[in-house]
Length: 291
Length: 163
Image 1 (cartoon, rainbow over the protein chains, first blue to last red):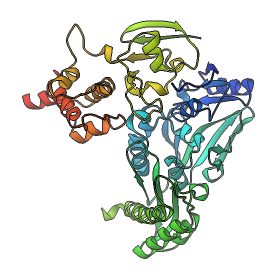
Image 2: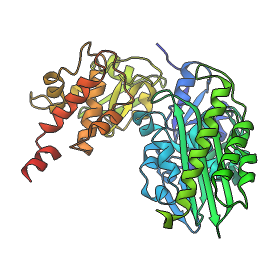
Image 3: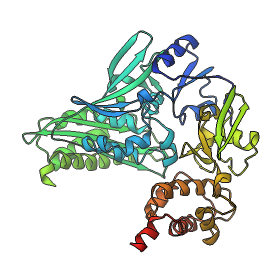
Image 4: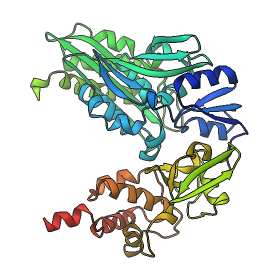
C-alpha cells in the first residue's frame, strides 16, 4: 500500500489565510490543490512535507476572464475547465488542444493549472503552452505580490522561482490581434507524459510575422522554449521555407535524452515534425479570412 | 482529525489520520468495498468515485480533502432495489469479466450519461480513457454504456426516437 508519511492538514478558505499558514508553518509546509502530482510524490517519499495546506476552497483563484488586453487564468482553474473554456479557446485554441491531451479525463477533473506549473515537471504540457504564449506569472506572498515572465518562473526540473511562503495566483496571457496558436503532442497512450510536444503562437502584421512563440516540452529545452526558432521567424513572410527552418532550429536547440519513450534522434525528429504542423496551423489561424 | 462527508446520501463522520486516502476511508472505515483499490498511482482508475458529481480517482484524493463533499460510490448506483441502467447494461452486454474495473467504469458511465445522454462511441471511449480494463478489450464496456444510454428513461436516444 502506498501511503504518504504523516503530516498535518490545514484547510485555507482565503488566499490571505493560505499565505499566513505558509508563513506560520514554515518551509516544510506545502500547498496542495488537485494533488495529482504532489500526492504521488508523497507516496514515494520524493516529497515529505510536514504540513499540507489545502487550497481547494480558494474559489477566489478559480476564474478565466478577460481584463483589458489580458486573458487572466486563476491558479485554481481545473484542467477540465480550461479544456472546455470557450473564452480561452476563442483567443487561443492552443488551450483546448493541449488540455484534451493532458493526463486523462479523471485527472483533469482534479488537477489545476497552477499546480501543474508549480510541479514544474520537465514533461509538463502547460509550461510549453504558456511559454509559447509568453505569459506572465503572478505570485502572492507574505510581502506582497510580484509578476514574473514565464521564462523566469521555471528554474530547473521540479523547481520554480517561488519562495516557500509564496503562492502562484494567476497566469496572464496578453491578447493579440492577427494571432494563431496550436499544440501538437505525441504520447504513447492516454495518461502518459509526452514523448515530445510543441506549442506555437504566431502573429502576422501586414503580411510579416511580427511575433512568434514556440514552447517545447519533454525534450529539455531551456525554459521550455525554442528561442532560436522563434527569432528566425521574425520579419519573415509566412512560408513553408520559414516554417521548415524554424522547425529545424527547434529540433537542433533542444536536448532530449534517450529513455523508454524513445531514442534522442527520434525525439528530435518529432520536435521538427510537430513544430512544422503546429506552426502551419497557428499561421492559418492568424489569418481568419483564409478559412 | 475529524472528517464529515455525505456518502451515497448518508452523512458520515469519523476521526482519521490526515494521510488517509479517500479510497481507504471508503473501503476500511465505511466498509464500502465496492470501490476497488488498484495501482495506487492514479493510472488505473479502478478506484473512481463521484466527488461532488465529478468522477475522480479516490487513491489520489485525501479523505481530509473530501471532507464536506458528496461522494457517490458504486453502492450508491440504482435505487429502490432497481439497478441503474448502467448496471443493467453491463449485465446485458457482458461488460465485465473479472469485474475489478467495473465499479469505476460504471461511475464514469453514469457521469457521462448524466451530462450527455446520447454519447457517440468516441465520447464513450474518451470518458473511460483514464481507466484500465485488462479483460474485455473495452468493446463490451462501450456496448454496455450504449445499452444504458438507449434504455435510460430520460436519455437523448429515446427523446430522439420519440421526436
